[in-house]
Image (cartoon, rainbow, N blue to C red):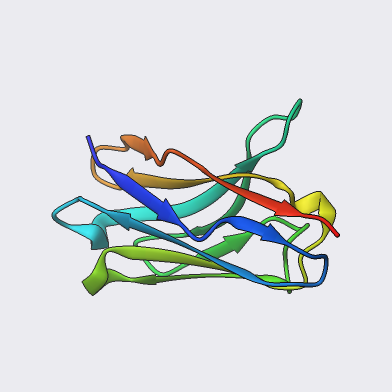
Amino acid sequence: QVDLVESGGGLVQPGGSLRLSCTGSMPSFNIYNMGWYRQSPGKQRELVALTTAGGSINYADSVKGRFTISRENSWKTVYLQMDSLKPEDTAVYYCYAQNVRTRLDDWGQGTQVTVSS
C-alpha cells in the first residue's frame, strides 16, 4: 500500500493554468509508473498523462500540447502542469502509481479542478 498525496487543484478561468503535485510514500519511487487520471460527473475515469519508470511519456489526445507531466524521483513527486485550460477539463484529478515489478496499482484521494468564468 502506497500513500499518494495530491495538491494544487482549484478554480481557474478558461485559458488559465494550474499545477498539480503528487508525492508518494513508496521507498523506491523509480520503479513506479506514475500518472494522472480524471473523472467528470457521469463519465468514466480516463487517463490524462502517464510517465513510466523507463522514461516514456503518454498523453490523452485531448490534452496534448496543453498539459505537461514530469517527475522528480529524488522528491518522489510527479507533477501535472496544465495550461490553456478549458471548461471541459473540469474534473476530479487522481494521482496513479503502478509498481512495475508487482503490477499493483495505488490511487490518490483526488483533487478537484474547476475551469469556469
